[in-house]
Length: 62
Image (tube, rainbow, N blue to C red; front, side, top):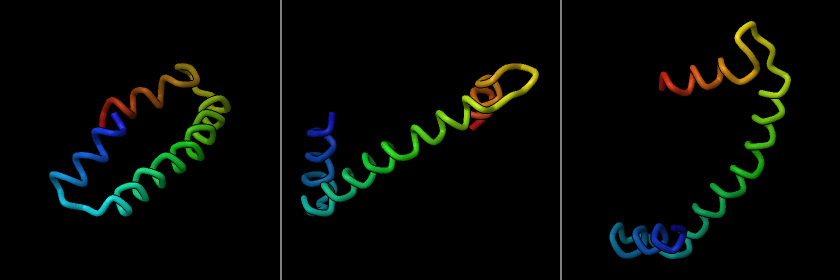
């Protein structure tokens, strides 16, 4: 999938390979940082309907 995205951005949209690779790298690094933070936050969340149910409800609305 990553190769297809790189091909699409470069050939179809006309972006340079360097900028495309940089954008992909930034998104992967951000995902690696934010996922553990959100996971730790959801582990500490306490509500009357459960730990992760409020987050799933909120995600389903947007």
